[in-house]
Amino acid sequence: MQRLIWVIGAIAALAAVTVLNSMPAPEAASTGAARAQHSLVLTGSSTVAPLAGEIAKRYESAHPGTRIDVHGGGSGRGIADARQGLAHLGMVSRDLKAGEGDLTAYPLARDGIGIIVHAANPIANLSKAQLIAIYTGEFGNWQALGGRDAPITVVHKAEGRSTLELFLAYTGLKNSETRPRVVIGDNEQGIKSVAANPNAIGYVSIGTAEYDIAHGAPIRLVALDGVAASSEHVRDGSYPLARTLNLVSAAPLRGLARDFVEFARAEQTRDLILAQYFVPLAQ
Amino acid sequence: MISSSPSILSPSRSDALLRATLRGCAAVAGLILVFIFLFLLSAAWPVLREAGPWRFVTDAAWHPAEGLYQLLPMVAGTLYCAAGALLLAVPLGVLSAVFLRFYAPRPLAVVYRRLVELLAGIPSVVYGFWGLVVLVPLIAAWQAPGTSLLAGVWVLALMILPTVALTADAALGAVPRDTLRAAAALGLGRWSTVWRIALPAARAGVLAGVVLAAGRALGETMAVLMVTGNVVAVPDSVFAPLRTLAANIALEMAYAMDLHRAALFVSGLVLAGLVAGLMLLAARLSGESAHASA
Image (cartoon, rainbow over the protein chains, first blue to last red):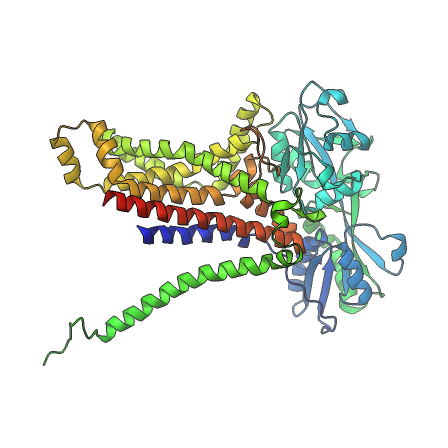
């Protein structure tokens, strides 16, 4: 009996740890600058990294013998590494700032997040101030916004997600100031949570929301400050809750780096951009 | 001349080989556990060194991006969820096993047992999805928005019910026939036989099933993540949201960096600690019950 208990214990401990190991882990950083001609190092934004990784995979299979290493670390690291030459290209999930004129940005795609409510919710437009009031718990009822008399279920993203980062940057809130009622992980879970609750409000990548609405999910994208939330408005820059995903470089592009950037920005990566729920730049 | 030497005092070469192999296997199994623990510890080390272990119980909240690492609400959430699920699943599971062994007609018992086995094989994400689209709106009609401790307990109870029922069934099946016949010879009724004779005799096996179920309840991730709301707070009612340690890891690990990532490994360590503590407790309990029945 005692022995059986220990065996069970070992199995349970293993199960607990499987949870950890099944999560994709950001790879350990390797920042050797001196690489052979046929290899390229990209570091930076964890939003851009999965897309860059997919593009790199396709590039490598189209150009045998090349090797492209993509590492995370955040947009800040992308800028710093591109400047210091630790990486050939930096990945930055925002527009370059005024003090970053020494770098050249090569836009890959646009990323926008849409505010979603249940299809039965009559609210069609929200201002930034209203959005902030909802997420800080100041408005607890849809009546305060001209909706029906029902409590607002605030659906929020878990810490570390890039959609959360963009949402916080736009609203100017700190995560500790928000008062969510439901915290979710990926976009699909967010859409399911809102679709299952007529009083819920949430935010997800616009690409995901458009896809699910087209496939019959009972949700609606709410206009923000009078601008309809659509891939179109994310692309032309009129929708406020959006950003550009860039590759940046300090020196003029040469050789493999130039070839890769051209490849990444060409029509052939459009499906990869859509697969990550980003918005391609060209129509 | 005797070619084989069956003497116990001088074991043959094949015995020695077998012994070495078995020792090797046992060592590998043990080492894996040790390595997992060391891996967890090394991955958690940066934040344990930088912030120290006390921050995980004294900080104001869990906001790892802002350097706040309070884990206790999630420990409480994990324990509440698992305890609630056990509270529902253990009586149900044990009673259904009793029904199977002592009351159900044979054909029904066979079908019922297959059904329970089928229930045990459903992947957890299916339970989670069912919970999100069926159970949560049901609870929401009663007390909005539905993602709550209650939903988590309910889904978990369904998931561990087959484990409890099947192990209790096996344990009751292992009670010696003679014991049951002796009970019948003494004129005991069916219920008295079950309650006074069969269940006490099967106690160790039933307990093993409960421990197995508790381990699963503590570590279950996807199903719980989809129905409990995942807000980091100690639930003050069954309708309040909560986040479990396993859900915390699954929600945040994919994009976590540096100290945030290390802090998630600390929640993994705490979870492993909880499970290990449970096992120790169960080992003691079963030891006592073995003495009591001896």
